[in-house]
Image (tube, rainbow, N blue to C red; front, side):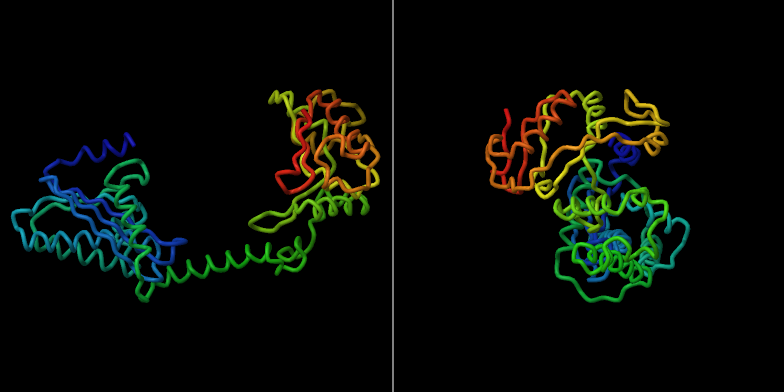
Length: 353
């Protein structure tokens, strides 16, 4: 904000200060622009309008600057005494750079160029286009942003669009369709639909098939899939060695064990309790990522309970083997388990204090 304010302060107060901004939903749809004009006599004028159903944010920024010039043309024509030098502040560096380099392939930039050229031929004033960073708490800039968003929600006209904007819309729609395919189950196999073959270097390939199946069962019962992409998350047994290291780093004083009910169907449950590297037991967590990839894990096998825990509301309601599982975690980490989750409802959180 300090740098932006210094930029503003370099322009005299007796100049007309204009702030412009453009907005478009998803960067390509329902464009709108906003303009805030401050005259030397401290009077202000604001403009807000839609730009079209298919209008990019880039084009809306150019429309905003052009609208400001059109408005000043009208004001100078009606009130010649208000004719004054002008600085137009915009946070669209791409538009200003294209304008400066005379890269006028976009029709909106061509129109802006011609409008400014005509304006300067008519009025003997200086007109400067000045970039300032967006969202830096500059009142004029923030107000132009609000007006632009208001314009984008106004009724839109079906106008022609540029080839560049059409390309953007196609890319956005393709990406959205691809992402939506995961949570809606339209991708077929959840992992390999967009992959020609499995990755042979994937570490999961080193597991026996039965262990891979257990990971898949944990994944399915726990609903471990990305919310946006639907991609499956890698699941495995609880790593107490890593959890102990996390406690050493963070010093937490209590644990919450969630999704205990996911383990209800397992005959045996494993927990990782130590790491071995090159046949030697490690006393601390591996210091390098390369070592983490090479370690072998020592597991402690605990008996499962094979009954539902979803109706448990007190720690004593849990099956004895489930209680033993919780106590094993506490004894290895040295931190008490204060809550246990056995379902999705708020009532499914069991206090263990």
